[in-house]
Image (tube, rainbow, N blue to C red; front, top):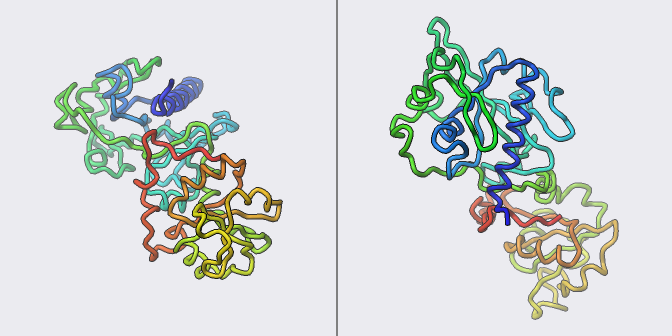
Length: 337
């Protein structure tokens, strides 16, 4: 059985191979860098904890690449540049039909643009008069402030990264010591934190964004069926003023069936499929939205939305919007569609 981290890496390696072939076709320079370069030297592949790929390009080559996203198969990939939504500092090559989140869930949902699995493409900017490079677009101080002699890069070498041959700087030790002073070349630094807290190699990010942010789209033309009969139901009713559109709510507690809670009738979830038509909208209003989502999928219902307090109002404290509340043992929110 292939674990999820292996699947993530397979997608990233596909992206790296696509990037490398494109650069070769257009004679662009690039180098494996940061943790990817260290992985080449130490392991001829990923560092044990690593879940991303970094490459750098001299600024001239980087700009040329960013000007020609059509060089990539746009049905499969997107070259996301700093001119695009959701990509403010450096370019990323992303795969369509996948999902990868690094930041808190609510922040990710509010960020426009592509959220597919990616590799990072970072520009090497020249320091005028110094015959050096730096990477000013990065945020981490040790990477932003590091300075690299141009002589450390050429003539470029070749290294092995998993099944691929990749370009590496002529003097990788000098470069890595500049960034990671305490890494005891080429060993040391036995652990680090993964980049991604959630990813899905099979489902596009659009589903997750729509599921959690599309609740109100066209809702006044819909018959609303809620799922949940606790305090989140009350909050939802008070916040959106859509009670007249609510047919009923459903709950897994049999003691609530047939009663009215917050003036909304509560019914057995097994009845839900019989109510649905093309005018219906099912909305989960419960802290247990992940479990309920799985339940709906088992019932053959995959067209529904989830209400998260913090997405609509930062002042309402709802612990389920913290990223750790979406984590589980296999790094993946259940695939519900």
